Length: 128
Image (cartoon, rainbow, N blue to C red; front, top):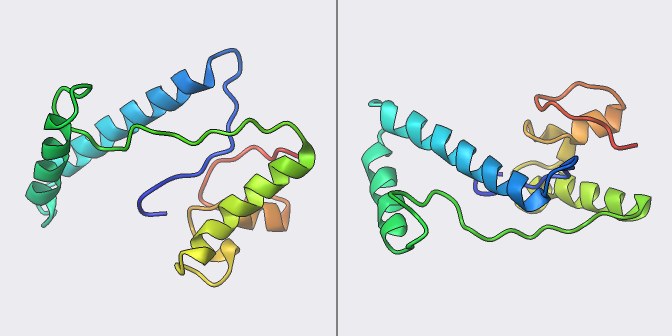
């Protein structure tokens, strides 16, 4: 999706909220660096100005706000619930009208799950 991400993730021995926070912080840092360093990006100044304005309106930021600061985590306890969430994630690009079939979205694990083997762009570990 162009404006959000869905993940089924495990935190191992760490607190999942810390993992999400660190992921959001580091990915925002890298994306902002990429945007600011790309002089040929026609929307560069507009995007940086927008992120700066959002950052100024939130005391938790030092300069920019790239992402919303809320999350919607759900703990996955059972196999059926896990597959329901995986299917929801896969169907997200279809519902948004980006593709007709979930397997056609390049940044989805749907093609991997459909084929039962690694064939998509993303690095995944099959849950079951």
